[in-house]
Length: 318
Ligand SMILES: Cc1cc2nc3c(=O)[nH]c(=O)nc-3n(C[C@H](O)[C@H](O)[C@H](O)COP(=O)(O)OP(=O)(O)OC[C@H]3O[C@@H](n4cnc5c(N)ncnc54)[C@H](O)[C@@H]3O)c2cc1C
Image: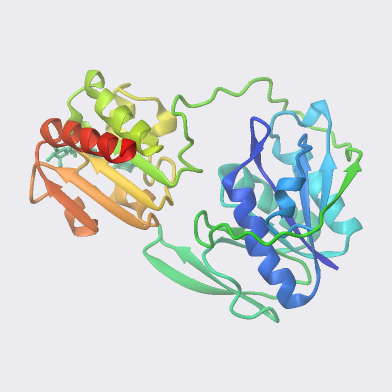
């Protein structure tokens, strides 16, 4: 019996979420006294996972799995789970993982809880706390199936080193017919992806136009952050849709979310509520975002942001 994690990677590097899943899975595996197994697709750097507690990595390499496609990925993960008598699968809360989870739940007759924010309260029956209603509330969920799937919310557990000797095993691909082939993936322009970012710098209509986005980009690159925006900003074509965050856009669960010239409409807040610290810069003291902010600066963004960038650069270089 073992615990299985699905590790996602980007450009040959494991994503932060993969290391978080390994850390989280390690703790549960220790509680249960079972093995922690990882599955990687087209990735050979298994040693990295060993630093975070994975004992065995099953490497599946095949050109047909170069780009993520839910059905073949799910078929391969399900095959590994069945062959290894896995009772608990742990996925991230990325969009791809959320595609996979229901497919896996059906093929393994498994229970599934998404957006889990803590270690299980009880292992038997598996009892987990999950965020719901766009992170405004928590629910406790009991999974009573023999096999269960946890979707771990980003940044909810953190990355913890716990080095184990790791064994890498190559596995041939489990064939599955699919009528969908992903030929090309267009990456968003930001250097850091929103899903993986520790810090996100986001701009709203208060920035007045795309020509002023250098403020957001400069601040983001100084902080090593991802860039994001409100919905109208992407609707107007000032920024790509991949940067739109909120209820109808991407969810953000960063450690720091900096909102500049964003009013804080309920639909925007719905997507960023699970960020840990929110800093808001807005020239209107009545802007609703201040009610949700941990730190607020009432000021003109065009005055305060260049000063902030300058001070941060001095601090970084000192
Ligand atoms: C069904 C539905 C779904 C939606 N989904 C989303 C979603 O997912 N994400 C999303 O973001 N929105 C969403 N919206 C839109 C949402 O309701 C708001 O209209 C939108 O978030 C407002 O964007 P904004 O804050 O950039 O613009 P505005 O509301 O125009 O706010 C601009 C802010 O900038 C401030 N400002 C102006 N000048 C300056 C300056 N010089 N310095 C500093 N601050 C300045 C203003 O005080 C103001 O608070 C949705 C709406 C609907 C109806």
